[in-house]
Length: 299
Image (cartoon, rainbow, N blue to C red; front, side):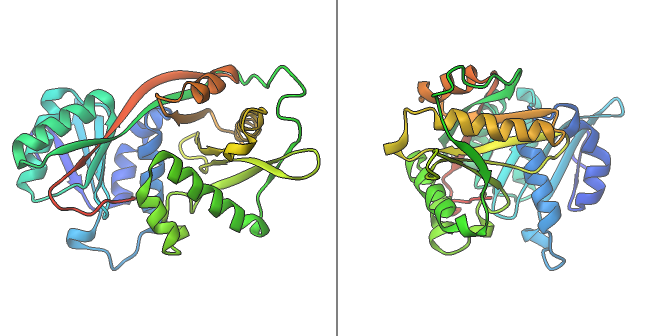
């Protein structure tokens, strides 16, 4: 046990039994921990142990869980919101225990505070590599013009795999996501962050695929839309908005209570698009990579 009531474990079932309600209490804000931890749960293997095993921690106060962290085998450290002093306490003790996260992802203030503390305790230099807005769906609002995004959506099947993989790679090139490019090029599609997504294609009236969107499975009532991609030569016709509405409606029909997505703050077009169809800004998130020699990690 760490000071300040932090409790660590490698037992994911015990962790979820004790911290699951906390994670599900704010599914939009906790969307990344929910999906990351569910992926660790469903893909766990009995031969992962010791330094290779994921680590889970929960902060308890007054008999209630107040925050959690998780550290994946590939070095991804995820945190729910923490005050600066508690972030520093956690950084200090993770360093004392010999952990070396490759990067940290959290809400903007928490990620920044942890990066600063981690540098102070380990001399590792934090380098920002990810900055994003989090949006949550309010009232779904389909495009007003019937001409905008004309066509239909359909669930991608096995016959569409080559195109889906190619478009995901193009998306990664566009946003500079090298870790996923490396996994795709190595033939490790299932290990990439896209491997467990559910893809929908938007087709023009003549049946030509023009855009795609993917969603996570429902976890804690939450579905995340990720990614949304339209090839450059097909943009400006409303296809991205149409396919986003399609997958958002499907998620609601399937029982999701929270539908969320991340956007690039430097892309005013996509931010305006998602707001037009009903998404509302919730928070900002940031990622820092640490430069002490750990290879770039995907998950």
